[in-house]
Length: 381
Ligand code: PMP
Image (cartoon, rainbow, N blue to C red):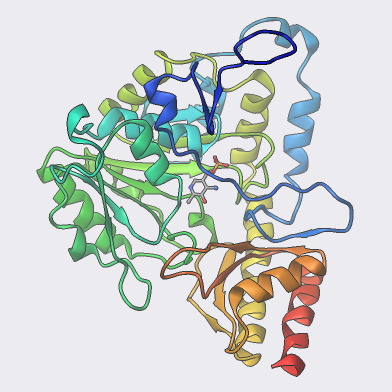
C-alpha cells in the first residue's frame, strides 16, 4: 500500500500482483548495451561499421506523407519480391518481419510443440534441440512458448557436430555461423540435419544472421527440404539494425504458418518506411558485397594481430571474433579495461565461454584502437 495515495501499488518482491502467470515466468533476453555517447567505439552488438547503401537513404526520403496516412502493405510485397529476386526463390516463399528476432519468435511459436503445461520446462519429452553455446534468445523464446529444450554441447573446439542432433524429435535451431563463436557449419551437414528433422516431420531453423560474412546459405536447399527454414536479418550485413527488418525463406506451408502467427498478433509489423528501405537494401548487393568484403578483410587482420599478441581466436565466418586473452589476463578484466578506454565489447559470464570476449568488427581505425589496448596488457602481464 502506498501510504500517500492509499492505493495498492501492486508491488511485490520483483513482481506485481497485476502480473499473470505467463508474465511471471518469463525470463527476458538481455540485449547488449546501446550507449549513445560520442567517442565510444561500439564493438558489442555486431552492427556493421559502414553506413547503409545510399539507395536505402533515397528510398526513405522518397516516402511521402500521404503514404504514412494509410496502413502499410501487410504482405510487404515489394520487400518480399526484392528478396525473391536476389535469392532466386518465389515471393510466396518469403516471410517478412520486424527484425529477425520477431521472425524467430513467430517460428518458435509455429513449429515447436509445447511441453505439457503441468510437466514444466525441463520435461524430457520431445525437447527442441539447440547448441549449449549459441544465441541466448533461443531459451527465451522456448520459455515464452513453453517448449521444452535440450542444449546440445558444442565440441571441445566449439564446433557444432551435426551427428549430435540425431535424437531431435521436436526440431532444431542454430545460427550458421554460430554466435558467439563465429564457427560455420558446412552445407552438407546442414542438409543432413534438415533431412533428419523432416523425417520426424519437424522443422530445422537455420538462423543466417551472419551468413554474409562467410558461411554458405542453406537457401538453395529449401525446395528439396520441406522442413527447412532459413532466417535472415538486415541488421548486420545490410547496416540496418536501427530499421528493424528481417525475413525467412522456406517452402510455402512454413511461410503460411508464419503468416498465421503474425496475423494473430499484429498484421502490420513492418512500417511503410522500413518496407521501402529494406527492399532498396536487398536490391543493392553490389554496395553491400563491397562493404562486407571490407569487414571480412578487417576481421582477418585483427585476428592475425590478436594471435600475434598471444590471444586464441575461434575461426570466425562472422562479423565478430570470439577471442581468449592469454593468461593471466582474464576476459572479464580485459572487458573492463577496454570499457575504461571507451571500447565496448561483449562478455558472457557463463560456463564454457567466460574465458572469451566477443568483439564485433569495426572500421580499421576502431580495430587499431582495440588492438592497442590489447597490446598494452603485455606490459602488465
Ligand atoms: N540471430 C542472431 C544469431 C543474432 O545474433 C541476432 C542479433 N542479436 C539476431 C538473430 C536478431 O537480429 P535482428 O532482430 O536485429 O534482425
